[in-house]
Amino acid sequence: MKILLIADVHNLPFGSKITLNSIKRIIKKSNCDLIVFLGDTVHGPSTPEKQYEKCLRQVFDLTDNIAFASVFGNHDDECKTTKQEILDIAKTYKNCLTQGCDYVIEMMGETLIFIDSGSYYDGEGSYYDTVKKEQIDFALSKAKGKRAILFQHIIMPDIMDYIDVSDVRKKGYVLDGKKYYKFKDDVHYSGRLGECPCPPDINTGEFEILKPYLKACVFGHDHKNTFELDVDGVRFIQCGGSGYNSYDRFCRSSVKLFDTKTLETEFIKL
Image (cartoon, rainbow, N blue to C red; front, top):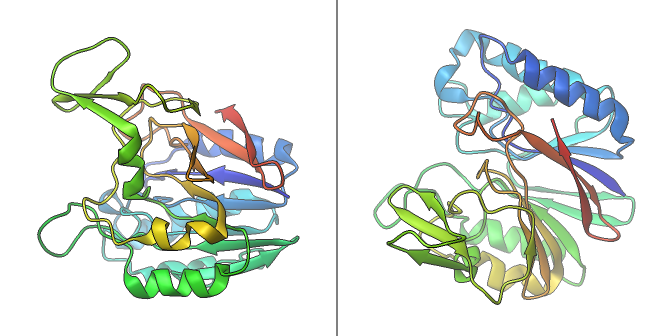
Protein backbone atom coordinates (compact mmCIF):
# COMPACT_ATOMS: atom_id res chain seq x y z
CA MET A 1 0.00 0.00 0.00
CA LYS A 2 1.33 3.44 -0.93
CA ILE A 3 0.37 6.46 1.22
CA LEU A 4 1.22 10.03 0.27
CA LEU A 5 2.07 11.89 3.49
CA ILE A 6 1.34 15.63 3.44
CA ALA A 7 2.10 17.62 6.57
CA ASP A 8 1.57 21.25 7.50
CA VAL A 9 0.15 22.79 4.33
CA HIS A 10 -0.76 25.92 6.34
CA ASN A 11 -3.07 27.18 3.61
CA LEU A 12 -3.98 30.86 3.97
CA PRO A 13 -6.74 33.18 2.67
CA PHE A 14 -4.44 35.26 0.49
CA GLY A 15 -3.49 32.19 -1.50
CA SER A 16 -0.75 29.60 -1.51
CA LYS A 17 -0.48 28.99 -5.22
CA ILE A 18 3.05 27.61 -5.12
CA THR A 19 2.12 25.12 -2.42
CA LEU A 20 -1.18 24.10 -3.99
CA ASN A 21 0.23 23.70 -7.50
CA SER A 22 3.18 21.67 -6.21
CA ILE A 23 0.97 19.32 -4.19
CA LYS A 24 -1.41 18.90 -7.13
CA ARG A 25 1.49 17.93 -9.39
CA ILE A 26 2.84 15.38 -6.89
CA ILE A 27 -0.58 13.80 -6.29
CA LYS A 28 -1.05 13.24 -10.02
CA LYS A 29 2.36 11.55 -10.29
CA SER A 30 2.35 9.57 -7.03
CA ASN A 31 0.06 6.66 -7.96
CA CYS A 32 -0.80 6.42 -4.26
CA ASP A 33 -3.65 4.44 -2.69
CA LEU A 34 -4.31 6.95 0.10
CA ILE A 35 -3.42 10.54 0.97
CA VAL A 36 -2.94 11.44 4.63
CA PHE A 37 -2.97 15.07 5.74
CA LEU A 38 -0.97 15.23 8.98
CA GLY A 39 -2.51 18.37 10.46
CA ASP A 40 -2.27 22.15 10.15
CA THR A 41 -3.91 21.93 6.76
CA VAL A 42 -5.20 25.48 7.28
CA HIS A 43 -3.39 28.06 9.40
CA GLY A 44 -6.32 28.87 11.67
CA PRO A 45 -4.97 31.99 13.43
CA SER A 46 -4.60 33.82 10.09
CA THR A 47 -7.89 32.65 8.58
CA PRO A 48 -11.16 34.54 9.14
CA GLU A 49 -14.18 32.36 9.79
CA LYS A 50 -15.82 33.33 6.49
CA GLN A 51 -12.78 32.17 4.49
CA TYR A 52 -11.93 29.00 6.39
CA GLU A 53 -14.04 26.65 4.28
CA LYS A 54 -12.54 28.04 1.06
CA CYS A 55 -9.00 27.48 2.36
CA LEU A 56 -9.77 23.92 3.44
CA ARG A 57 -11.49 23.04 0.17
CA GLN A 58 -8.57 24.42 -1.84
CA VAL A 59 -6.46 21.66 -0.31
CA PHE A 60 -8.97 18.81 -0.35
CA ASP A 61 -9.89 19.60 -3.96
CA LEU A 62 -6.36 18.55 -4.91
CA THR A 63 -7.01 14.93 -3.95
CA ASP A 64 -8.52 14.22 -7.37
CA ASN A 65 -10.91 11.52 -6.06
CA ILE A 66 -8.07 9.59 -4.39
CA ALA A 67 -9.08 8.43 -0.90
CA PHE A 68 -7.81 10.75 1.82
CA ALA A 69 -7.77 10.91 5.60
CA SER A 70 -6.61 13.57 8.03
CA VAL A 71 -5.69 14.36 11.62
CA PHE A 72 -5.89 17.68 13.43
CA GLY A 73 -2.86 19.86 14.08
CA ASN A 74 -2.47 22.51 16.73
CA HIS A 75 -3.29 25.35 14.29
CA ASP A 76 -6.32 23.91 12.42
CA ASP A 77 -8.95 25.05 14.90
CA GLU A 78 -6.99 27.91 16.45
CA CYS A 79 -9.76 30.20 15.26
CA LYS A 80 -13.55 30.43 15.42
CA THR A 81 -14.04 27.39 13.15
CA THR A 82 -14.54 24.32 15.34
CA LYS A 83 -13.24 20.81 14.80
CA GLN A 84 -16.76 19.57 14.18
CA GLU A 85 -17.28 22.20 11.48
CA ILE A 86 -13.98 21.18 9.89
CA LEU A 87 -15.03 17.53 9.95
CA ASP A 88 -18.39 18.41 8.40
CA ILE A 89 -16.63 20.10 5.47
CA ALA A 90 -14.27 17.15 4.99
CA LYS A 91 -17.10 14.64 4.99
CA THR A 92 -18.78 16.33 2.01
CA TYR A 93 -16.07 14.72 -0.13
CA LYS A 94 -16.97 11.22 -1.32
CA ASN A 95 -13.31 10.21 -1.18
CA CYS A 96 -12.88 11.37 2.43
CA LEU A 97 -12.22 8.56 4.94
CA THR A 98 -11.85 10.84 7.97
CA GLN A 99 -14.37 9.75 10.60
CA GLY A 100 -13.68 11.99 13.58
CA CYS A 101 -10.87 13.15 15.85
CA ASP A 102 -9.72 9.63 16.76
CA TYR A 103 -10.59 6.77 14.40
CA VAL A 104 -9.31 3.69 12.61
CA ILE A 105 -9.31 2.62 8.97
CA GLU A 106 -8.87 -0.97 7.81
CA MET A 107 -7.55 -0.75 4.25
CA MET A 108 -5.67 -3.11 1.95
CA GLY A 109 -4.69 -5.36 4.84
CA GLU A 110 -3.42 -2.49 7.01
CA THR A 111 -4.78 -1.13 10.28
CA LEU A 112 -4.38 2.65 10.23
CA ILE A 113 -4.99 4.54 13.49
CA PHE A 114 -5.51 8.31 13.52
CA ILE A 115 -5.11 10.23 16.78
CA ASP A 116 -5.78 13.90 17.55
CA SER A 117 -2.64 15.03 19.40
CA GLY A 118 -4.38 18.24 20.42
CA SER A 119 -3.28 21.86 20.48
CA TYR A 120 -2.08 23.48 23.71
CA TYR A 121 -2.00 22.11 27.24
CA ASP A 122 -4.62 23.43 29.63
CA GLY A 123 -2.54 23.66 32.77
CA GLU A 124 1.05 23.77 33.94
CA GLY A 125 3.93 21.55 32.93
CA SER A 126 3.63 21.50 29.15
CA TYR A 127 3.22 23.88 26.24
CA TYR A 128 1.65 21.44 23.79
CA ASP A 129 -1.29 19.23 24.63
CA THR A 130 -0.96 15.57 25.57
CA VAL A 131 -2.65 12.47 24.19
CA LYS A 132 -5.17 11.49 26.84
CA LYS A 133 -5.76 8.11 28.51
CA GLU A 134 -9.07 7.55 26.74
CA GLN A 135 -7.38 8.12 23.38
CA ILE A 136 -4.63 5.66 24.24
CA ASP A 137 -7.24 3.12 25.35
CA PHE A 138 -9.08 3.60 22.06
CA ALA A 139 -5.92 3.08 20.02
CA LEU A 140 -5.02 0.03 22.10
CA SER A 141 -8.43 -1.53 21.51
CA LYS A 142 -7.96 -1.16 17.75
CA ALA A 143 -4.27 -2.12 17.55
CA LYS A 144 -4.04 -5.01 20.02
CA GLY A 145 -3.00 -8.22 18.33
CA LYS A 146 -1.99 -6.37 15.17
CA ARG A 147 0.93 -4.39 13.75
CA ALA A 148 -0.80 -1.10 13.09
CA ILE A 149 0.40 2.24 11.73
CA LEU A 150 -0.39 5.32 13.81
CA PHE A 151 -0.75 8.87 12.47
CA GLN A 152 -0.79 12.03 14.59
CA HIS A 153 0.39 15.61 14.22
CA ILE A 154 2.72 16.10 17.20
CA ILE A 155 5.54 13.63 17.75
CA MET A 156 5.62 11.55 20.95
CA PRO A 157 7.84 12.74 23.84
CA ASP A 158 9.90 9.53 23.65
CA ILE A 159 11.86 11.03 20.74
CA MET A 160 13.73 13.27 23.19
CA ASP A 161 15.52 10.21 24.62
CA TYR A 162 17.43 10.15 21.34
CA ILE A 163 18.37 13.83 21.25
CA ASP A 164 21.49 15.42 22.74
CA VAL A 165 21.23 19.04 23.94
CA SER A 166 24.06 21.54 24.36
CA ASP A 167 24.19 25.06 25.73
CA VAL A 168 27.20 25.87 23.54
CA ARG A 169 27.81 25.58 19.83
CA LYS A 170 29.31 22.26 18.70
CA LYS A 171 30.01 20.73 15.32
CA GLY A 172 27.03 18.85 13.92
CA TYR A 173 24.48 20.48 16.23
CA VAL A 174 21.62 22.67 15.01
CA LEU A 175 20.62 25.88 16.75
CA ASP A 176 17.01 26.18 17.87
CA GLY A 177 16.23 29.05 20.18
CA LYS A 178 19.14 29.40 22.57
CA LYS A 179 20.25 25.75 22.58
CA TYR A 180 21.89 23.30 20.16
CA TYR A 181 20.58 19.87 19.24
CA LYS A 182 21.65 16.69 17.44
CA PHE A 183 20.89 12.99 17.56
CA LYS A 184 23.04 11.10 20.05
CA ASP A 185 26.12 9.48 18.54
CA ASP A 186 24.78 5.91 18.79
CA VAL A 187 21.47 6.73 17.05
CA HIS A 188 21.12 5.51 13.48
CA TYR A 189 18.74 7.66 11.48
CA SER A 190 18.10 8.90 7.97
CA GLY A 191 16.83 12.29 6.84
CA ARG A 192 17.37 15.60 8.59
CA LEU A 193 17.20 17.04 12.07
CA GLY A 194 16.72 20.74 11.32
CA GLU A 195 15.21 21.84 14.63
CA CYS A 196 14.51 20.46 18.06
CA PRO A 197 11.44 18.18 18.05
CA CYS A 198 8.48 19.80 19.82
CA PRO A 199 6.48 17.13 21.67
CA PRO A 200 4.49 17.81 24.83
CA ASP A 201 6.61 18.10 27.98
CA ILE A 202 4.43 15.53 29.75
CA ASN A 203 4.61 11.88 28.68
CA THR A 204 1.27 10.12 29.19
CA GLY A 205 2.67 6.71 28.17
CA GLU A 206 1.15 6.54 24.71
CA PHE A 207 4.15 4.98 23.01
CA GLU A 208 5.07 2.62 25.86
CA ILE A 209 1.55 1.20 25.94
CA LEU A 210 1.03 0.94 22.18
CA LYS A 211 4.47 -0.04 20.89
CA PRO A 212 3.95 -3.84 21.02
CA TYR A 213 1.17 -3.41 18.46
CA LEU A 214 2.68 -0.77 16.19
CA LYS A 215 5.06 -1.08 13.26
CA ALA A 216 5.24 2.63 12.42
CA CYS A 217 4.27 6.07 13.72
CA VAL A 218 3.96 9.03 11.36
CA PHE A 219 4.18 12.67 12.45
CA GLY A 220 4.10 16.25 11.15
CA HIS A 221 4.35 19.50 13.17
CA ASP A 222 8.14 20.09 13.07
CA HIS A 223 8.55 21.59 9.61
CA LYS A 224 12.33 21.38 9.32
CA ASN A 225 12.61 17.73 10.42
CA THR A 226 12.47 14.83 7.96
CA PHE A 227 14.27 12.18 10.00
CA GLU A 228 13.33 8.52 10.30
CA LEU A 229 14.58 6.00 12.84
CA ASP A 230 13.61 2.85 14.70
CA VAL A 231 12.44 3.43 18.26
CA ASP A 232 12.17 0.17 20.22
CA GLY A 233 11.27 -1.71 17.03
CA VAL A 234 8.78 0.88 15.77
CA ARG A 235 9.58 3.04 12.74
CA PHE A 236 9.25 6.76 13.52
CA ILE A 237 8.59 8.71 10.32
CA GLN A 238 8.83 12.48 10.66
CA CYS A 239 7.47 14.53 7.75
CA GLY A 240 8.60 18.06 6.99
CA GLY A 241 6.26 20.92 6.20
CA SER A 242 4.73 21.05 2.73
CA GLY A 243 3.56 24.66 2.87
CA TYR A 244 5.56 27.63 1.68
CA ASN A 245 3.79 29.97 4.14
CA SER A 246 5.22 28.85 7.47
CA TYR A 247 8.32 29.62 9.51
CA ASP A 248 10.45 27.28 7.40
CA ARG A 249 9.96 29.28 4.20
CA PHE A 250 13.73 29.15 3.67
CA CYS A 251 13.71 25.36 4.02
CA ARG A 252 12.56 23.42 0.95
CA SER A 253 9.02 22.08 1.40
CA SER A 254 8.42 18.37 0.92
CA VAL A 255 6.10 15.38 1.12
CA LYS A 256 6.79 11.64 1.46
CA LEU A 257 5.47 8.56 -0.32
CA PHE A 258 5.23 5.76 2.24
CA ASP A 259 5.27 2.04 1.40
CA THR A 260 3.46 0.30 4.26
CA LYS A 261 4.91 -3.10 3.37
CA THR A 262 8.59 -2.14 3.45
CA LEU A 263 8.17 0.86 5.82
CA GLU A 264 10.36 2.84 3.43
CA THR A 265 9.59 6.31 2.17
CA GLU A 266 10.42 8.35 -0.89
CA PHE A 267 11.31 11.93 0.00
CA ILE A 268 9.80 14.32 -2.57
CA LYS A 269 10.79 17.99 -2.69
CA LEU A 270 8.09 20.42 -3.77
